[in-house]
Length: 379
Image: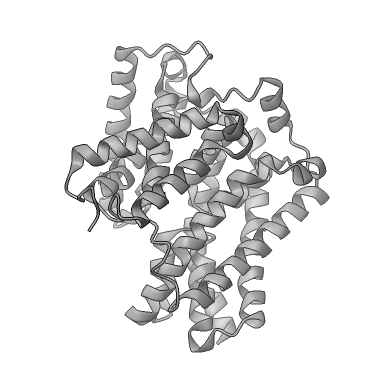
């Protein structure tokens, strides 16, 4: 039982927004600039929940992840320039495909390197699906390979912690000088030249939040999400509503480019929601439940992540891919489109937000097939 009850919405709201503020503050702090405020948010939220100060699960968390995060996608994409995206996201998509291959390589090599027992082929397929697509693919592959409820629970508890650690590694990579010296990034260089003042913080950037503009942005975003949900249900594709949210948003952004360009504060509001999501992601992670029953799967998952990152960074160095693009491509596979969009947001890579979401959605489409194939190949 946590000190702050799961049903105390006001108290939990205070904690969530305080931790989000802490992330923004760290982004403008000397230490935070080197490590990213998001990492500190994740660690702080994990510490609070695992020491029973706040709950691991709560309706407020579900609201942030289930309602606010989809709402943030349009806010982050209202100024998407399709001509620029098609001109520049090709590299990200190609790198994403290579990153997906890296996940499969990691899953297969890890299977042969570690003793996983009878559950091995199933977990290899499920983790391949999860770290190319997302939780939807995790569930789909687990059903396709006929995982038992106990096997599913163990695999899920281990993967949750691994995913958080993978997210932290992705956020930390731009701050590791050994890597940045070997894999150049024009985006990172521009960020340094601007004094690491991330646009998403809204500090010292001359951003003026206008209530009329915020209301307009929210109204359009709500309408897009509602329409997307209706379309997804009508087509029997409830789990893929983010696909329709992205498509409708891009249509609006390109049919009414002047109106979208004149909106102020929409991107910053979307960023705030993403920071709240990071708080929820950290708070929902049980750092101890996997110990014992799922520890061997935790090491297997970390093996996949390390091999994945090693392959992606090697490809980036050999083929001279911008480090920021490589991180976004890797993130789209490992942690999904919404979280990768938040990574791009937190680093100030606004032009990579849409490629991140598009690559992540493409991962949703192919991951289940790849995961089932990996299991069948290893049986």
